[in-house]
Length: 468
Image (cartoon, rainbow, N blue to C red; front, side, top):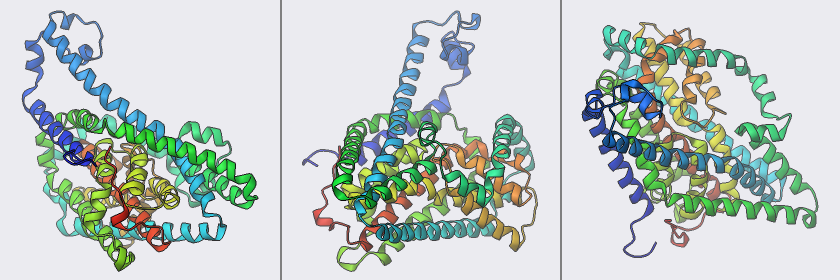
């Protein structure tokens, strides 16, 4: 970074802060009366560009407001679509290169075994933290009967849709069905549907195949994938220069759409979820890094969070592990010093099977709704929550809102009325942003530990942070 130039993560923080301020202002002072004063009586139709007699008096000021709103939406949506466009090819190319570059199937087994073990351990610890906080604070007792009925009524339609989706997917919860579903019958179909588990399987399989053929045959193929992976990373660097503006555009409508009355009613529940996620980020990940990286090249909290902060901020605003994946890989490689081979293997795998934040959220949400309905959970129920939350978090779609569908399945397993998700949907978008940060931060932490164990973590003094 050139002297006097503001670092990328600070630019994103500024964009995020301005977006929150703008969202709060709009939430408080932009009302139906504001639209009415501009000649708009049907804002939804007007913003959608539909003709309506109710908006016949709309003038230049209303048109300017609509243009500003549409430009804001366009900026955020294009940024997210660009990241999602990159997510599938970077997973495919990076994993193939990562596996093939290992040059030894035995090394792949060792690397994969360590990675999955760390993912599983941190997931179970996260669930334990969530259950402990929720059981001790009991956030479900802070919501009145009246507010519960009001929230249920407001979100009934959305809740019904999520429950219907979950019931359609329920058979997939079978362990054998999950294992079978990992293997794609048509790899091109898996790519077209962005089925990340199947893409991971396919990429690892191709990488293993390349290690088993002579190097003179596999070398040119690996170099092609290396070139494609490098090209994608360069596109990410260019795209990240727009991140501060995109973060602003993404956060404004989220904050503007959340009423403070809802946050007040579910405030304790939100604090328990966010508090649990914070404990994972402040204690679990730094503790793991402190214990499992050597003294001469220890990854302390300062080094770690400075390196991954751009990815964390993009994860917060996008609520998507998949969309953030290219940024995560870039931060882990260029800013933290993890070798490309390890970063290209661990990060795509983590974005698919490592959902610590999601698992913790499901544990808290399940016990919260049990308290709300006065349902006592036995030790067996708590163990079932741990098992179901762990299993459902593995392979969870890395897109906004996917964990709510999985939550329905966890609720059904312990006989809690799934209609209760209508109560928490009002604040789910904000909590989704927070748990996505925890998810991708866990991927980066495990990548650092694995790289350190393999002797492929650069010294901090040799890592050049590239703030695009």
